[in-house]
Amino acid sequence: MSGFKAKMMLSNSDSPSLFHFHIGTILDIFQSNPLQLNNGNFLDLLILFGALQGFITATLLFSKKRHQSSHLLASILLIISLACLNIYLFEVLPPDVPTAIRILEKVVPLIIIMPLGPLIYFHVRSLAGMSFSFKASRAHFFPTILDLIPSLVFLIATILYAFNAVSSFQPIELEELNLVYEKYVDVPRWLSTSIYLVLTIRYVSKKRLAQTKWVKQFLGVFMIFQIVWLFHLIPYLLPSTSNWLLSYLGWYPIYIPLTILVYWLGINGLVHLKSHRVSTLDEEQMERVVNSLNKVMEKERLYLDASLSLNIIVEKTGLLQKEISGALNQYLGKSFNEWINEYRVNEVKRKLVDPSFAHLSITGVALESGFNSQATFQRAFKAITGKTPKSFRASANIDS
Image 1 (spheres, rainbow, N blue to C red):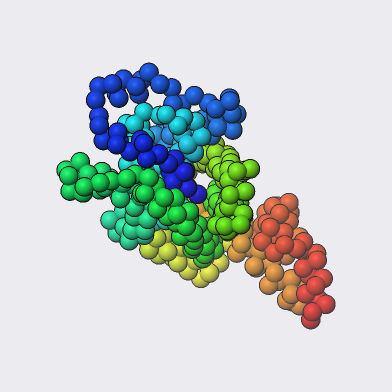
Image 2 (cartoon, rainbow, N blue to C red; image 1 turned 60 degrees about the vertical axis):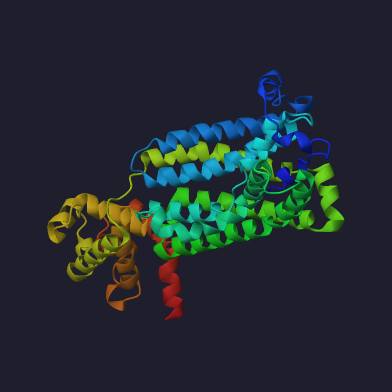
């Protein structure tokens, strides 16, 4: 996803002045305009605005105290926004940019992609009520060193030269190595993000969180981006197509989708997290709550009561209302009514294939199973089984 820094190569004639700082150099920074658009390029401007929005949204999300989901999403936005800012700077910086800015561009890494996959994974887990600790999860972020190597090498070489530890230092040689490194380091970056996306999808499937709209959309847009990235990465790595790709398309096929992703995450992320209340229970506690709920429901068959309410469940189990709601929403990805109706639908299915209930109409079976509304029953049955009650009974009679 990078390769930009490697392309901003210094000429040999520039190298002696890289380490001579004076007041004139500082003044040059303010007198020049390195952020001027080349030929009014609209795409560069779009990328810049996307990066700025990403920074603003990330700041708003970071301001939410003790809200791990927001902080993890903010980190994702920050990483993508920094990458967008990097491509904008690459496109608009003129060749005669002041030396101080050129050095700053090489020492400060803007392309930091390796943490993206783990952040996606832990963001989704946090939505399920799992607490996140960087200390406990730091091993997931060790590969970030791959993103930092070019800046560290340049910084170390600069320091050694400044203290006369090396007799000569040619930045152009580092640039040539950096060009090769930045090209192939995109492979582990893509693989890391893809692997963590798969792990996240498996976690969501196991916890049945895929029913939540935000999680579906969140993972879906990143899967789409991974496909787009792969279609750009393959010709970029092939020597026969690399030069053609960068000459005619550049990095816009990657960074325009990234910019759109920033806008989408910023708007939808804020809306979702504003209405999302993270459960105070950890995963083990939520599992115990759900087991207790299922046990009392199956033992006493409370779902047969058409007037069953959350308050009755609270009285039967001794659990707090917020514990029940939190466990159902975060652990099972269901509302209270969805959870109850699933029991009732299973009861209807059992009775529809039982000959002893053959004398009852489908509506009669539904009423005896706890439903008090035919419309509610029809919707719930179709949503859970994918069939209408009538077609289900007909297929059951054929099979028997």
